[in-house]
Image 1 (cartoon, rainbow over the protein chains, first blue to last red):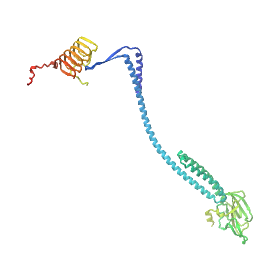
Image 2 (image 1 turned 180 degrees about the horizontal axis):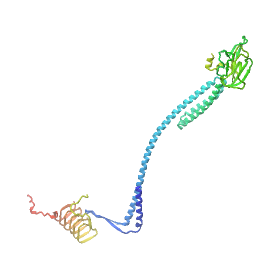
Image 3 (image 1 turned 90 degrees about the vertical axis):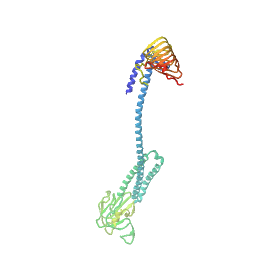
Image 4 (image 1 turned 30 degrees about the vertical axis):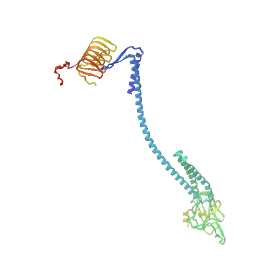
Length: 337
Length: 133
C-alpha cells in the first residue's frame, strides 16, 4: 500500500518535470573531483537538461524497481499462501489416501459379504426346492423355473470375477452384484410367497385325532374279507362325531354322497392336489366354499361302505392316489402313532 | 579516516584552483586551500593547505600550512606542517618544514631545514659531537 502511494507521488514529479525538460535548458555546471594529494583533478561538465533527463530516467527506474518490489512482495505473499495450500493439500491427499485404502478394505469386505449372501440365497432356494420336492409334478415344474435363474446368476458372477472388470471401478462391480442380489432376492420373495401359499394349501396335518387303522396300498378287503383290493387312502379310527379338520387351504369341490365313501368332502388345494374325507356322519361345508387349514369341515361317521366309525382320508395328485402319510408333517405322524 | 587532524582552524576545503590550462603571474594570498594545476609565477602565501598537481609548473616561493607536491616547483617552501613529495614531484629550492615525507622517485634539490611549533631548529654545528676518528 505504502509502496503504491509512493509510486504515485514519483509519477507526479515526473509529470511536473517533463514540460521543463521539454524546453531547452542550456544551463550547465561542472563537477570537479580534486584529490588532496597531487593526483590529477577530474572534472565533469554537466547540463541541467541532462540532469533532468537523468532524474527522469532514475525516476522511471525507481518506479520500475518499486513496481517490481511490489510485485515481488505480492508474489512472495501468494507464494507463501500457495506453500501453505500445498502443504494443506498434501496432508489432505494423505488423509484421502488412507481413506481410499479404508474404502478399498470396505469394498473387499462388502464383496466377501455379498458372496456370503449369494451362498445364502442359493441355500434358501435349495431349501424351498426341497420343500416343494414332495410333489413330483410340481417339483418338475419348479425345477424348470428355478434352475435357470440360479445358473444365470452364477454365470454373471464368473464374468464379473475377471481382473479387467475389477480395475474399472472399486464399487461399480459391487453395486452391480448388489443389484443382481436384489433382483434375486425379489424373485426369491415372490417364490417364497408362492411357497408359503403352496405350503398353506398343501395337506400336511392329520385330519382327525386317532390311529391309522388301515394304510395305503393293497390290503384284504374289509367288507368281503376274501379279496385283496387297492386302498386308495388311509383309515383313521376315531369315535363317532369326532371333528374332521381340513388339512390345507383350499376350495370345497364336493360336499355330499360319493358312492361307497358315503358322505364325503373333497377339497381342491390347487397345484393338482385334492384331499378326500369319506364316511362322515355330518358335513359342515358347502360346495365352492373357501376353507382354511384346521377348519372343521365334517364329523366322523360310518356312512357308505363301512364297518364302523372311521375317516377315510385320501389324497390325489393330478388324479393319481398317493400315500397321505407322505404329506403328514413329522410331528403329526408322531401324534398319530 | 575521518579522525581529527592536527592543528586548529584547519580548513580542508580547497577554495582556489589554478587550472591546468591557466597561467598566473603574481602573488596569491589565501586563508583557504589552494590547488595549482597550471603555470604560476610569483609568490604564494597561504594559511591553508597547498596542493600542487602533477601538471603544475610553479616558479614561486610557497608558504602554507602544509604542502603536497606532485608537480614541478622552483622556489623555496616554508610550511607549518608537513611537506609531502609525491613520486612525480620535482622540487628545486630550499625547504623549511615541520615534517617531511618523500616518496620514492621524487626529485629534490636544495637545502632542508626543520622547525618545531613555528620555531626554527637551527642546530649549531659546533654543538654536534665530533665524529670519532
